[in-house]
Length: 102
Image (cartoon, rainbow, N blue to C red; front, side, top):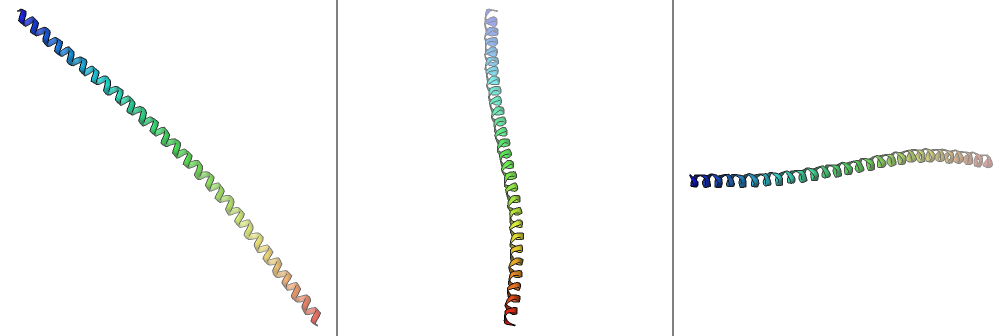
């Protein structure tokens, strides 16, 4: 009977030790999961910030390109006006020279 009680106590101690190891492992795994969760969340935030910055840069570049396109169109219009004025001046010069020779 004493041996049975000792055996029962030994089995209980072994089961309690297994339970403590299992609880310790569970705690370790929960901590690891929590760390990985935090790391993944931080990575997602960093990626979102990077994408937001890239979108902002794209918007700024598009605005700059639009401004350049407007400037180009304005410069082309000005060049066309100057070309017309030069052609008109050339015609007036030719007319004046023709009058001088007649």
